[in-house]
Length: 161
Image (tube, rainbow, N blue to C red; front, top):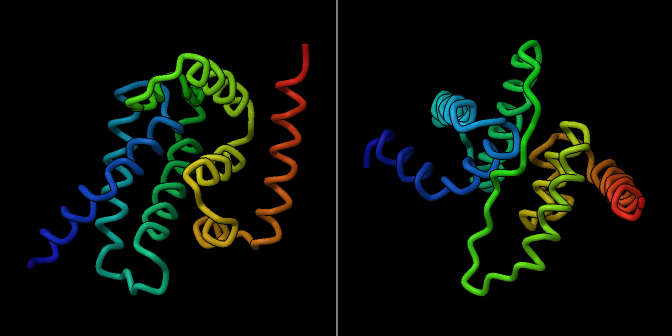
């Protein structure tokens, strides 16, 4: 199998990660497409250097998160803001109460700083502190501390009347 075919296969297998990341860090469909292309480009540039020291998904999350943060930094001049409204959960057992609660949660996550949004995203993806640490480059104890603070902020925001 050629390197190009391997790369396409990796992208197809991890497309969900990339789409979630673009929805988290881009405002509209056009910006999401641009960010998606940037992430795929960065993954392609680094593909032949992946040594397998970390899990493939960890490597993808790391590049996607770093690319998204750089994308935000470069587009701040335009006054872009992150929108989580477009995130849709696909569930065979649709629960409107759960959907409403998730929209409220995402509205509060939207108020967090850019790094904290990324950490919460990874946490909601089911990543353990050690893997979030590998992805972000922060220490595991720093991730744990940040998660406690983030949960506190979210709890405080959500319990305000």
